[in-house]
Amino acid sequence: MKNKFPLLLFAFILAYNTGHAQWYKEKFVIGTFADPRIFGVTRNADDAKDTLSYKLARGAYINLLTGPQFYNGAQDFSLMDKTLGLASAYGMHVMAIDSKLQVTTDKFSDNDAQNVLAHFKSLDPKRREALGGYSFGGEFPVTKAGQVKKWAGFYNNNDTDRPAYTYLLPCYGFKTRAEYEQYLDAYLSESNPAQKLKIVAYDYYPFLSPSLMASYFYNLGIIKEKAGDRPVWYFIASTTKRTLPDINDYNLRFMAYCPLAYGSKGALYYTYESLPEKMGMNYYEAIIGLSGQPTAKYAKVRTINYFITNFAGPIIMKNDCVGTYHVSNSPTNENIPDKYILQRNNRYVSSIGNPNILVGIFKSPNGGKYYLMLVNKSSNPVSNVAVAVPGSKTIQELPASENYHGAKNYTKLKTSGSGGKTNFVINNIGGGEMSIIEVD
Image (cartoon, rainbow, N blue to C red; front, top):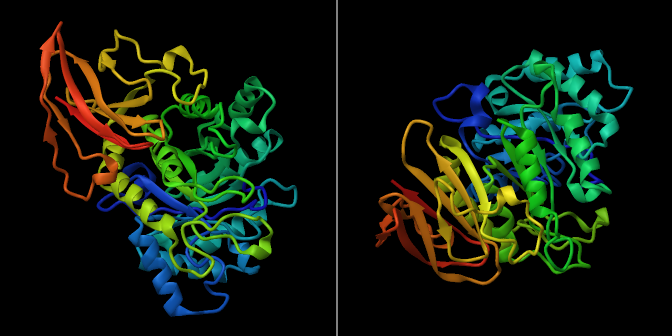
């Protein structure tokens, strides 16, 4: 989907009261592809529009910028430096790239790498603080894995607080799953720690066909497994080709929440700004329209990001994902591997009485309390979802994601005990929506 965009800028906001080296480990990343004013900032030097645009992004809980500098035509560092200045002013980070940072070409040399590094290490303190790392672009073929990892090692070793970054292809770009897994191994299996990618990011757009693409949950699962203990970042499509139905509210919720149940730690919107018609992509408008004003999608994205930032994200970042399970392959009819199907002997969840539910289980390494993140995969609401967990437990529920408005107030649910289990009922989970349960 992004083949015409071979280079990315990548970013994130500094985690307060933590070292810069930990920024991508401390807070959930919410980012953009096609940043605020990427097609206008610095080109027409309109400070008022820049200010409004960045305020809108922060209002939608964006903390990561990904806009390629070369879109604006600069061949020096000036546009990247201005982007870093704006990011600093609005509490964001940028994974930087300039038009020379083409690490997969034979023309890219140690001298080029040193020049790029020297510039970004010599920034003034505010811009330097906004620099999150170095993006190489993404969706490279398997033949480029060696070069990508080589230069990742260079930047990982020479600016250790700011990781090198690339993003990987989805499985539907390969003929077989075996071929895809070999591709993932080429990028993610690395015996030399210095060349190991620190962040595992990939794109998969499940609504590129009239119905959900059949390998979506396979891709989520295999990325989770191959990433190991590294954070996983995923893309959410906010727009698509006009030959398909436009992305709707259910699509946005589904793409945002399902990866959370797999323990993913960053979400990136493709795209934030709408792509200009002159680029010939023939997309619907995205989160910010061609006029520079929010579209109807902005409010939905803001609601999703608000929920992730204030509650779902902190749970994921502070706890271990100890399991991810589907009750069944409904409603997507995907052949989900048995290890991802909920079994009745599960130590955290005995049963869930609706076939459409996906659950992620998150537990602190130091305590007995754990959380269930339940996602309704269906586009239709589900009601009176009966859940049973082993043992005698206190059960509390957070307001579902569409009704969450910032107050972290749990509601204690009515329970009953039988057969060594605690039973309770969740009244309603909207289509694509998430409900979070605390079990203590």
